[in-house]
Amino acid sequence: MTQLNRSIRWSDWNGTGLEHFSIRQVGNLFSVSSVVIGNRADAAYGLRYTMELDLNWLTRRFFAETTDGICLTLVSDGKGQWQDGSGTDLKELSGCLDIDFAATPFTNTLPIRRLELDLNASADLSVAYVPVPTLQPERVRQRYTRKTEAGYLYEGLFRGFSTILDVDEDGFVFDYPDTFRRVMG
Image 1 (cartoon, helix red, strand yellow):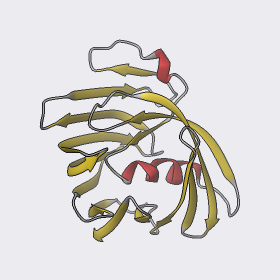
Image 2 (cartoon, rainbow, N blue to C red):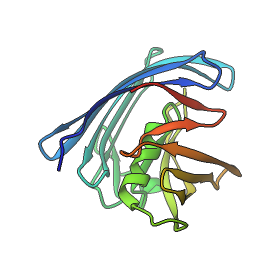
Image 3 (cartoon, rainbow, N blue to C red):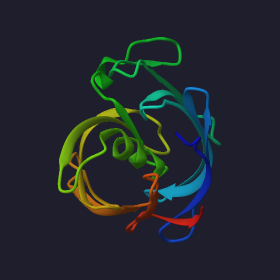
């Protein structure tokens, strides 16, 4: 297996926000580091986040901190059990294998890579959704359907949203219509 070592930049659809993202394979983990500036619901934010993923694309550790000082740490056993940074069980996230961080299109890569769906196959998921700028995680329902070799129908079932995500050969998003677009990498 080729070691994954990439840097990508995404802009929000309007060109007012930017993310610089890096992923590196370090032993038996993927290490993610990113900084983001953006807007959500008319609120401007800046943040950084890091993630550790196992080689099956399961989140093992997630950390985010806004420039306003709001912090969140989530730790997973990779089997659907989550804790906060102080070791308290987060039973409301029980059964979630994936995390969806609203600040980035990267977290769409996690189920795309992990599920390896055949053409026209779909999967319904419960995910740990982390909104910005509050960073208050909640359990939500999503669906991924592979429509083409490089196109996935993403449905946020919890909010009645759907769009086609165009991805590269590694499963990283090129375009997330009306939300994000890749500008480098």
